[in-house]
Length: 516
Image (spheres, helix red, strand yellow):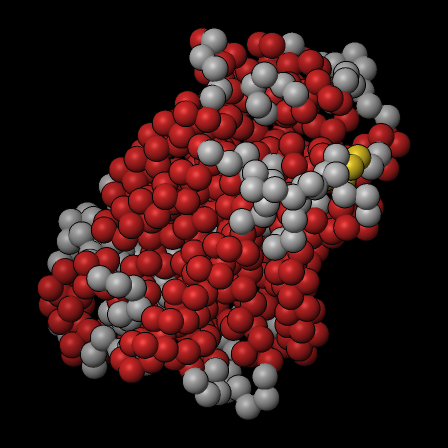
């Protein structure tokens, strides 16, 4: 943030270090820099949200590999995600800007940087919108289950869709109030997630009189996909964990609102993954040990949410409802933070002219210094992605696949460009040193594998109701971005563009005034 003294005296030597760094990258300090390092970590940790991803896809895990897949798949995916995150963090330290991934691609590409930037940005955009849709639709499913338990209202697809719309509206309103509120709620959310996992696991460990055996939790394999290949099911079953480990690019997108971004942003990325890895393992093991009754009963729960049925069966209805409330609050926070990150990415992409109607979406509310219009762009886009779930039973799985593939393609592209010969890269204060090449290439190979995996069919027999629509959606996005690029954008999109020289940047900051 530029204080009043700086705003009234446009001399570079009087600017704070973060504003000078942002000016060097070509941008004015338009957003309010009010986030601490912990708040930056909290936003990514909240979007990863083990109480969202792990629980909303627990049904998928129970049928696609079962307990053994969920437990060990979580460990494998967590380790590989850490590797991907390390590669991202190193680049984030050098380029702490809200554009994040697409900006990095433009700067790292030794040739055709604009094209790399364009496609990275579009994959990031669709992934961000899809992950927001997945998170809030998951919350709507849990809230509908809560309504069913407390009021008797059936958790129909129509009910879920209405709750979904209201949830998105609430998240749009919260984000419109300004970054201070979002930062405060993100801090609360980080502690809520940690304490929530402790409460849930402790209750499931101490209250039930019987628990599943260790052999069941760590070795029981279940395949209800219709496919006969155990190896194939193990691979596609990784989606539960990999989808959960998304959204940590939020730390990068909040760079222009974070203090000490060159150090705090990479730490936010890596720490959010590591803390989620540890807490998520405890959560999955704790819930799975509580499966003491009929496995099929949990899958066929009238609530539509197997974890809730497991909680009710193990600690009683009242206890189960209380744990459900803990999970729902965490999921609500998660959706809020996802909209925050999504809107910043849209704002930055529009700032560089890459989104249709960029002049509309690149707009800062002068009162709050937040990209209000981009917030509502994210809300409407997420709602559109969630609507097909009204007709298709596999639509939610497709949304999670789209989110996972889109985001990870965007995550890994800058790392790939970083590793190609001839890349000019000046490491920031947070870097991997001699470990950078092996970490980078390992992450690249992993993302290539999961990109193929999560476009494969998840259920057999394959028909219009069970078909994985993720490849279709990604082809549509890639086709749109490709055709738009070939016919128009390649002529005018030159990648991230400078907003002006030093004096012009400071004048832009003064015109915005002092944020609330």
